[in-house]
Amino acid sequence: MAGAPRAQGSAGEPVRVPVWDGFVRLFHWSLVATLATAAASGFFGDATWVEVHLWSGIAAAALVALRVLWGFLGPTHARFGDFLAGPKAMRAHLRGLLSGGGVRHRGHNPLGGAMVLALLLVVALLAATGTIALGGVLKSGPLAFATSFATGWELRGLHRLLAFLLLGLIALHLAGVLVESRRSRENLVLALVDGRKEARAGDHPPAPRRARPVVAALLGGGLLAVSAAAVWSFAARPGLGVPSAPLDPTYAEECSACHVAYHPSLLPRASWATLMAGLDDHFGENASLDPETAAAIAAYLQANAAEAYDTKAANRLRRVAAERPFSITATPFWRRTHAGLPEALFASRPVGGRGNCEACHGDARSGRFDPTAIHVPEETTP
Amino acid sequence: MRLPTILLAVTLVATAGLALAASPVRQAILDGYAKEAGVAAFSAERGKAFFEASHAGGKPETPSCTTCHGMDPRMPGRTRAGKAIEPMAVSANPKRFTDSAFVEKWFKRNCDSVLGRPCSAAEKGDLIAYLSSL
Image (cartoon, rainbow over all chains, first blue to last red; front, top):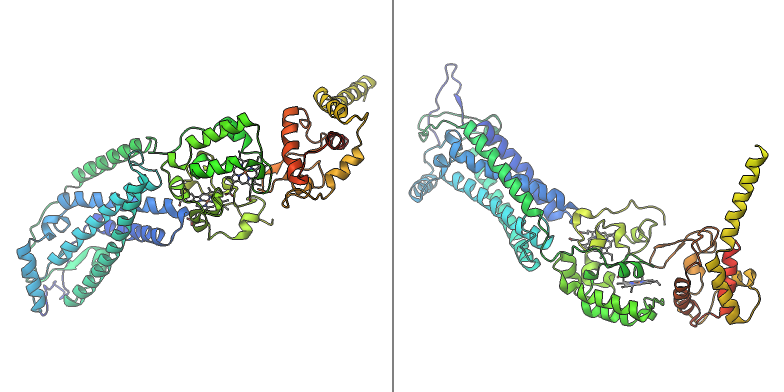
């Protein structure tokens, strides 16, 4: 509040009183770190960054859960009751702002409080949509057993929108901090480091509340432990539409003679039928089989083609290139996802060709193609 | 080394060598081709020439056996898709030519890929003779 007289200490210095407790400060800067990591890996990382993105997101969600608890059990200025203002108080605050006056809040002012709520809410929604997207698209995490690829993909879009919304809110939040720092002539960032702010005459009188750290720690610990156990047990369920059976032995034997045995879920039925009908001219080689073996393999491929599964690979590789209908590496999706990898890498000894999925995908045989199983070999001379 | 030890060693090496040279199944496969071709013996030399030659008539991607098996049959080869192929020479890979269905399957495929026609019994016999002689 401009021009308000400051409370003076005995030496004439303004008295700086505790405002932000240790947990609130730790929470704030940890959230900054985890969200920065999640945003960087989400916006700029390729599939191999998924794990970093996941763990930073999980950490942010856990922090938000604990902060909500602390909003009911923390000390004075940590409580929601201290900074969540009703519409009347909000209007009064806005009027004060516009008239260049207004009361100084030692904790969050009503606008700042609304921002805190919005930020917590959007991070929580990001965690929820992220978990559904993870379950549906990558068939991993607690919702993999119940989420289709289509649902997961839609939620992934929403997750992206929320991420942009969060960036917008963070920009507003920083602008608000800057404006309020100038308006009240105090360093609000420093206050979030040492936890103290000046006590000034005319401050909005806080309603002092005692923190309940033991109850909060017990509840918080319990909440995290129960959530972790629930997530873990749900995540152990088999994913919806994820292949679980090992490859048919005859197929694995006959079709891995010249290259890796491609999982049948990597091409649609029509492609497998065309491929099996032309084994005597198979990519410039004769790969013919005796009729019984060929029939058995063709039946196995039809029963387990891309249409029979719901993994990302099965969904995406269903769309084949018209001119090369049974080339996995010619599909638009394959070309797009592998466009960033250098030609020399595919030609190198340890890889030996685009079609050698197993060189980079540890789980290629299972048909999963989980990004966390990607390990690209060190490039060596061909 | 004492005499009995040396004798034992010699016997062991000799039996191992014999076993390699004359797996009964491999001999039976060779005998079958000999009967079909109407010849008494095969030529390892002709087999070598056949193995290393560039043939016309097959698919352009695979002009020669060596396209995938390499010039030295004692070394592993490499398919066009980049997968290793175990050595063809019996000395390096004693399992070679001991399963007639397997042998026929691959002659059927690879003769068509490389030559654009089935191999004759004489060509098959010469080739096995060459790959057993290394």
